[in-house]
Image 1: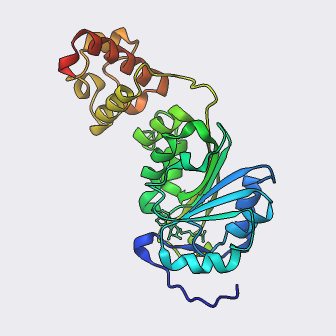
Image 2: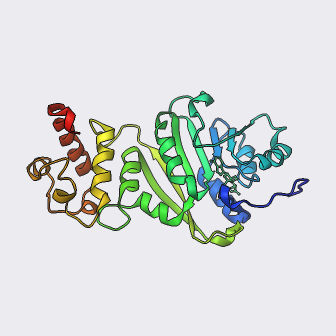
Amino acid sequence: MTEHYQHRARKRFGQNFLHDAGVIDRILRAIRAKPEDRLLEIGPGQGALTQGLLNSGAQLDVVELDKDLIPILNQQFAGKDNFNLHQGDALKFDFNSLNAAPNSLRVVGNLPYNISTPLIFHLLNNAGIIRDMHFMLQKEVVERLAAGPGGGDWGRLSIMVQYHCRVEHLFNVGPGAFNPPPKVDSAIVRLVPHAVLPHPAKDHKLLERVVREAFNQRRKTLRNTLKLLLSNDEIEAAGVDGSLRPEQLDLAAFVRLADKLSEQVLQKPADI
Ligand code: SAM
């Protein structure tokens, strides 16, 4: 890359820049952007993925927090009419300002690891405009996102993301693909919001509440951890064995518990 600007990677912005052409190409092939696509890249950095995304001909908006990277990005891409740069914090970005059609936006990012979970939740609040998301994340986080019930990886993150999305763990990426190399392994994940929620809860907030309470003490039985919310009889009436631990329950069972709780809220709203 010919650069007139020098940039030193900053830890506080989670900057680990991709430099492995093979990995970059593999990510771009997984995304398979088309000219008619509407793309949003979070944290373009020095443009490792940006160039390939623009070459697809798709309309690309990028959101970068680090002001020092803006001239580097502008120098490379400002002349392209399918490129639109926003300087700011992706966690505060108003995705509706993009005026993307429902179910159209394709979100991409080699994400700073410190913001990956809140950012995914921020995006899920706007799931209606999103077609899919491809992220580079810490491998451990991808394993939790893609986990199924029964193991130690199954928890709040898996359940709340799988409530909204189909999750695919695509491939792993070692530290050597980045400059500077991170201390952990990374992986690429694809999240596709469900067209129709497979297990809709009557009240999404109560689902969050039940899942949070249940996993606060994941070694305890449900009748123990949920006792302030639901009695053992109510748990059993939701078709759930109160002697199980939270990690043994699938998403559908958590939704049944949340729906049972919403019946209680209707009966005694002041208690919840
Ligand atoms: N996409 C580039 C690549 O693959 O080489 C850079 C990836 S680097 C892991 C993460 C990027 O996200 C950095 O450019 C960093 O400055 C940017 N970033 C960090 N926090 C951000 C935030 N809250 N909003 C937008 N960008 C952010």
